[in-house]
Length: 275
Ligand SMILES: NC(=O)C1=CN([C@@H]2O[C@H](COP(=O)(O)OP(=O)(O)OC[C@H]3O[C@@H](n4cnc5c(N)ncnc54)[C@H](OP(=O)(O)O)[C@@H]3O)[C@@H](O)[C@H]2O)C=CC1
Ligand SMILES: O=C1CO[C@H](CO)[C@@H](O)[C@@H]1O
Image (cartoon, rainbow, N blue to C red; front, side, top):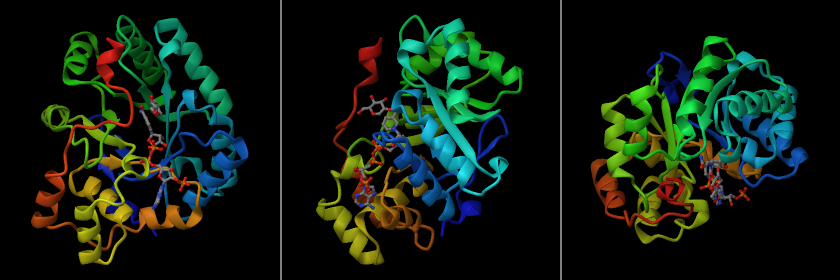
């Protein structure tokens, strides 16, 4: 069972965020989304990561309601999609997401991608929603250093989180260092590289050494490199496996070996294509 106390992070606005959670991208059916959310919550997960783009906020909301865990003990993230950006559009998109989720406040709202000419106004709308008490914390996703620097020239509230693609083949050294310097918490998407790392010899050797699975080693590497992680699975045994990472720690030799795997190789788009 997940040890939430070990995993919790305090964001730069003082909000506490679990260091570990469930992703639900490509869980297209609401029933399946509801079921995987309930299963994860039953096994100790408290952070759920969705997006309007994933088209499953209704199912995620049902899963939250039917989990039997108090809303206030959960941490729910959703994101404003690219064609929803801009000041007025973001306010409407947020309301639509909340209606689908059937929530009256959100823990974390993210700008999904740094869409040129829009993300500054999007951010202003998100700041207003924080002022109105509808969102606890606001952050970004897929922002490079230049996007963060630009946003911070007009922002009143600093982003708390930057959710980026992060796994041993894409270690994001530059943006990670900048976020650490600015106290912006990094969060990993596609932490398992969607299954493309399990056959790696180094990962397998480290897994064998600790009596853990390759997935557990990769997710523990997130924890040990100070990055929040949100692996997706719809299978109960994997949801359990992915959270059973708090009874071991990677040592310097493991961390050095994994560091050497970086190839700057992405499974998703490069943020540069958004401007
Ligand atoms: N901000 C952004 O732009 C993005 C955010 N995200 C977020 O990050 C989350 C995670 O990333 P995602 O792209 O889903 O990819 P992940 O790296 O989490 O990989 C998910 C895949 O790995 C499989 N899997 C999960 N656990 C195991 C395991 N222990 N052993 C073997 N296979 C396993 C899953 O299959 P199965 O379900 O069958 O177990 C699924 O096919 C997303 O769901 C989403 O919430 C993702 C992409 C972009
Ligand atoms: O959240 C997302 C899910 O993954 C996609 C890539 O495959 C991303 O483009 C998107 O931002």
